[in-house]
Image 1 (cartoon, rainbow, N blue to C red):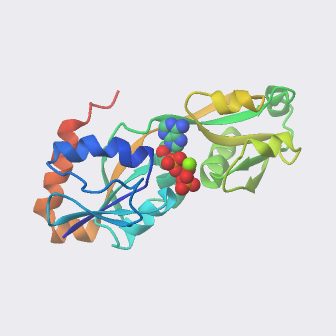
Image 2 (image 1 turned 135 degrees about the vertical axis):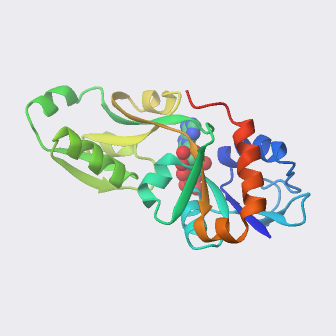
Length: 214
Ligand code: ATP
Ligand code: MG
């Protein structure tokens, strides 16, 4: 049995064409079914639905043999014990620093001021500001980061941006592009040794179906 960990929503939706390229068809719709384990047309392949942030953990501990996860989630997890053979070029967005229009971020940085930044991505944020030599107090949040500057709790946020509409709706502007984000195939290293052929087949089919990295 090969177990593939996916999260509901864009990662599930954007992985479906890759699975199709590997001859794998998921037999139930996660938006309609309450099941967390979904069968496929291949009796030896199943999909488990987990929270986006839990995908690396499932693969690390062998709850799943392979998984699809955002680089954002992977960097926060640390990637220990995970083989990362392929950037799937799906669920693309970027990580950014954003601040209210009324906060002069550039000046704060220039003057070496200490800034307060709210984010779900504390590892990425810590590393980014450390490399810039910026003194930062991080506030860990689990969602709706945009609210933190609006309530005066933080000067800025670190969050994922795709269209920028959410920032705009909350009077925030992007002030730093931290990194491009896309989703990554991750594989449990022990599973790769024990089930080499079927896992290789999936990696190869996904590779064929993925455009070369830009
Ligand atoms: P949950 O909704 O369970 O709290 P989540 O918000 O992390 O989890 P999604 O919103 O489905 O889950 O995001 C999953 C992954 O998709 C993210 O880790 C990121 O890599 C990518 N992603 C997030 N937002 C966007 C976006 N606006 N455009 C493209 N990809 C995105
Ligand atoms: Mg979400």
